[in-house]
Length: 116
Image (cartoon, rainbow, N blue to C red; front, top):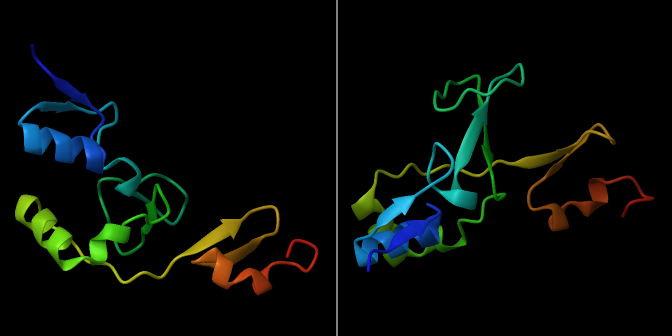
């Protein structure tokens, strides 16, 4: 019986690698919620091209919790090139016309009093 892994997030990629199975992904990039995408200064998509005028966004809000574990990071580096980013992120709330730095729970004081 042939097995195919559907979804190239971190779990699908890990399962495919471990079991030596084909991994299929609906999107044009692998990574699932761990993938990033770029938007240029005018709001247009710039992926896969990154320039100093682009903003990087994380689909899952930066759920690379396991990325700080040296063993896991070493394993990931053995499989693919890895870039390390210093996290400087915030969330834009268009209805409030304001940015709140990440992690949100540490910066709730920046929200209007009625929302806190």
